[in-house]
Length: 93
View 1: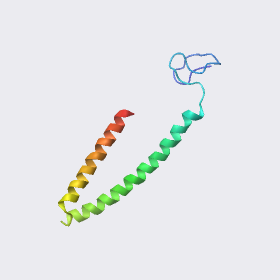
View 2: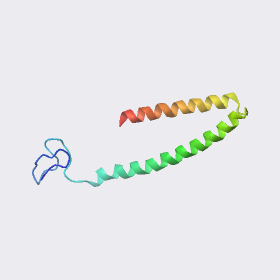
View 3: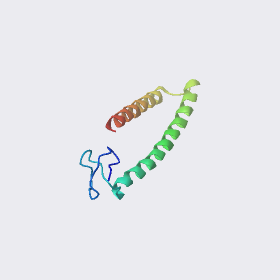
View 4: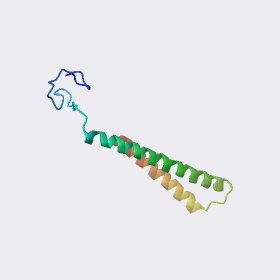
C-alpha cells in the first residue's frame, strides 16, 4: 500500500505510516471534527452578519450625531476584543 500523505510504501496491515504518521484509514472520530467545524462556520457567519447590521445602524446614528460617547467607547472596545480573539485563534491553527 502507498501512503496518501507522503507516498511511502507501507505494509497493507499498517495502521499508520512509519514515515509521516498519517493514519491509513479514515475513522469516525477523524471525520467528526470536520463536520463540526462546518457548523461553526455557518454560526460564525450568521453572527458576523448580525454584528455588521448592528454596526451599520450604530454608524448611521453616529453620523447624525445622535450616539452617546459611552456607546461609541463600548463599540470600539468590543471591536478590539473581537480583533484580538481572531488573531489569537488564527495563531492557534
